[in-house]
Image (cartoon, rainbow, N blue to C red; front, side, top):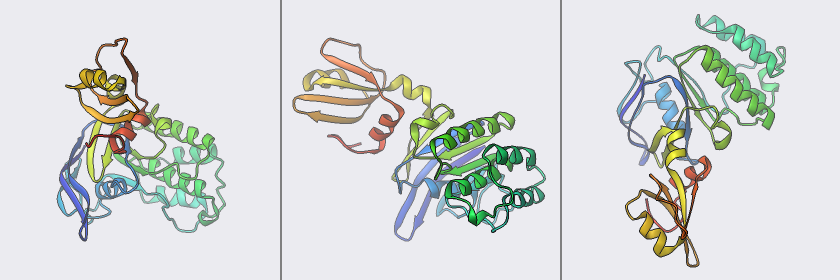
Amino acid sequence: MIELKQVTKQYGQATVLKNITLSIDEPGIYCLLGRNGAGKTTLLKSIAGYQNITNGTIKVDGKIITTSALDTGVSYIENFAKHFNLPVRKLLRIASEVNSYYDYDFASEMMERFELEGKKKFHHLSLGMKTMVSTIICLASNKDVILLDEPVLGFDAIMRVEFYDMLTESFQKHPRTIIVSTHIIEEIAKTIQKLIVIDKGSICFFDTLQSVEANAFRISGLEKDVKAATQNLNIIGQDTVGGLVTSYIFDTPPKQTASLEIHPLSLQDFFIQMVGHKGGIKR
């Protein structure tokens, strides 16, 4: 469905995306994680055809994506998206008029759920409500690929829970590829099927959450014991405090012994070790 081959994007001398090759061939809700400046927004904009890449190719459903593509099959909403300063209900109606596949009933239902005032103009909404209107329009488009860039900006805790429910309902009603870029890692874990981690313009992880649960661990103990237990394992990070060492691995963990403490990593801790570059080893 989405295929990237050796995709590179440069802005002047700065390389923001570095030779990315990635295939997403199954419908699902995917989470795109990365630090600020890692290339998340650039990647999403490139897949949507909002900007041309420097090298490589991007295809969606077999169509090459460029800024000149007439119908990419992609609906993309970036953070701080702007709309005409029209009443919310009018914005939803216009979106349905220009897209015959638009699910106006779903959009109206979500507007009522989130208590959006239909007569209130877009510029008069709070940041969270502006983001919600943009997200509803994007999901209701019924495009085969939905890209959401930081869709929970300005949301309070209750709105975020409602958003994840809406995301799940939208996918169940119309299975497709939905990629969500977010910084709030643990909250979205219950909603997504796969995780994509981008670091300094390169994809460093693409797999299921089950893979993280099965293979991401921290192993603590005396340096000699930890070193012996992890010498043939994939170490993604390491901390040293006094004579004690903690190694973070993405691999099959060694057997538990009296000299070692072995614990699974949370999704957030796994992400930090993948891209945080703290500790004593280089990756």
